[in-house]
Structure formats: structure tokens, C-alpha cells
Length: 358
Image (tube, rainbow, N blue to C red; front, side):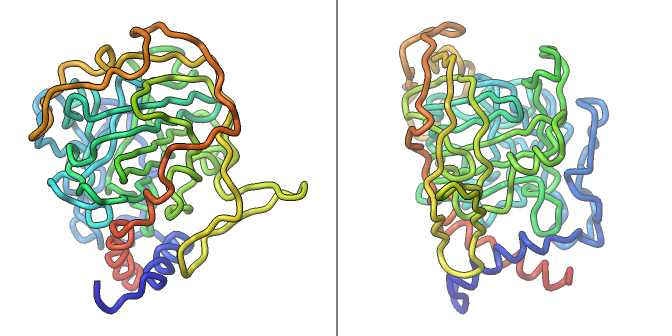
């Protein structure tokens, strides 16, 4: 990327977050576009042909007719450890930085009209359930969901410099929140969410739409895009383990206490970020472990790989040993997941977009 210093690109990234403004061609923020599932969903949420970053490359009406490994479905489901999706590129050997606006849904279960994460590609998953949000984190062979092997990825969220989201038109739904009254056949639209993927790891938080806007902004924060899962979504996910736990609330990213004083860290406009604190993984309890072979069935064979599947910790579907995790446990997520080459490479498009928007 000749002509651009790394520090300059980081500055553009932060500036685009700080001075986000709507695209005049599509001024309604993605977080304000609400649709009942499934009958209220349009074919495309972001269908303005003259928008600066458009048009949307995929579609939002997804069903049995779109269920295949070439699906361009951009409606994603986050229900439970056995039934969730990730945003990843539509073309092999891609980087998040180059494709952030066009990611498609890759799911662990069929039935949503999306691509499927191949068998054995998820090698460890932890789900933390709290009173305000649900957090997914884990390990994945990212080459099997079209990411370059060495890509450290970056952040995806429903905001962005033009408030149209990454991916454009990407919708998220869930039946997992208490406010859904345990109805597995009714899905709530998740208005605020945040995710990272790269470095063979991922994390994804969905904020309960019944909570306050302040809570959703705090726990699904999207402005710390360069410090990855470790700071944005502290966890102690383990490769080879598949578990669901109840958990305390995390301290929102950037907030920390030193000498009894609450401080706020803000990403610098230049240089590589270096937060002055160590994130704390919230206390968890009532953890239940599962076998991956019980969770993920009917999935396609990985490209160029065997069909062997990691079974994770001992236990069986729906049962397991309850345990507690220390609040001070060290996260195994990679904080480099958002500061690799890929996340920087995609910033040039935002720079040009902001030039037009200003």
C-alpha cells in the first residue's frame, strides 16, 4: 500500500469512527432499520444504487432456496452454542479489510438460507450469557470460511463511518434473550452488536434489544476497533472446549480503575494502540460443556481437509459439569485480531468515502 504510513491509516480509522455521519444517498442508520422476522424483511435492506459504498452485494430474504455454499445471505442468526453464525467473506482467500462491507453469513446449523461452517472448522466455542448481552467467542479454521490463512481480520458492526454498517445491510436476529419468553420460534432483531474475526479466532456480542440504548452502546461498543477480542470481549474460551456459562457483566471496553479512580482509555489517532490496563474476564458460573459432534451435525466436509471433528471437553449434549471461572482468568483471544494488515487495508475506501461525505 505505497504512499500511506501505518500511523496515518490508524488515524483515518479512528477519525472515521469519531466523525461518523450518514451517507446522503441512504441517510437512515442501519441501527434504525427494524424488520419483523421473517415476513417484514425486504429483499435488500441497503438498496440505494448511488450510495457511496453501495450497492449491497447480497440479500436479506434467505430460505431453503438460498441454502448453499454460494449463498449471499446477509441475515445472520445468533441463538445458542449449536446454532449461531459468523460474518465472513463471500470469496476465498479474502481479507476482512478488503471485504468488510460485503461479508455474508456462515452458520453452524442449516435452515437459515446461508452458507454453512464446514464440519470440524469450529474447534472451541464459549458462550457467556449475561443480563444485558450474550457473548460468543472461540476458535476457527478461518480458511474454511474464505479468509486468508494469515489475516488477523478486524471488526464488523452495524455502524461504520457512514452508519450503514459492515456488512452493508447486515441484519442479526436471535431467540436467546429472556425478553423473548423462551419462544424458540420467535426471533428478535438485534439492533446493536459487535464482532471480530481473524487470527483463527472470533468473538461476537449481541446486546439485548429490550435493554436501554445506553447499555447497548456500552456493551456493544464499536469504537475500539484496533484492540480486538481481548479488550472488547474478555473471555477464557479454550481451543477444544465447547461450553455455555452464566456470567457477570464485563467492564465496558476502555474503562478501567487505577488507584481507586475510574479512567477512560481512548484509542490514539496515530501509532499502534497500547491500552494502559489489562482487561478482566468477568466471573462465570453454571458452565455446561458439550461435545462438538452433538452440537454441529449435517455440515459439509471442509475443502481439502479430512472429516475429523474436535469433540471438545467431556460431556454430552444438554448435560455436563457445572463449574466457575475466575474473574482474573487470562483471555485466550488474540488482541492482534483487529490490528493486522487486513484491518488497515480496508481503510482507504472509508477515507475516500469521508472525503465525499464531508
